Length: 107
Image (cartoon, rainbow, N blue to C red):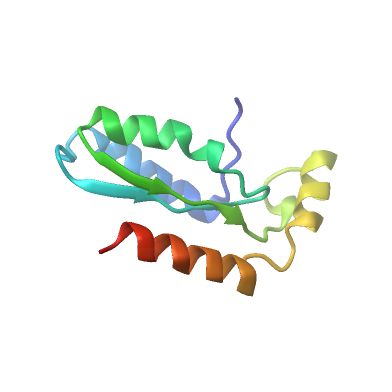
């Protein structure tokens, strides 16, 4: 699967990858909480697998749509359509779902 990352997120992704080798997550509780153009939880699977490989205990996974400006990272038409569909997200409904998720995973 090809991964498209926003320019401002590349540095965060680079930081995570560069510190991955030294992170000690053994026995630590983690959860994955991103936004994306389509807001599908299965996009979290590779990160969850990576965190588990470091000994982390996955307490949950949440995802919702997030607004983005397509022309900032690609000119592929399908992403333009996805960008239009995700406008206005996260919205109040997304925030309510996120709040319920956090209440479940954070005691």
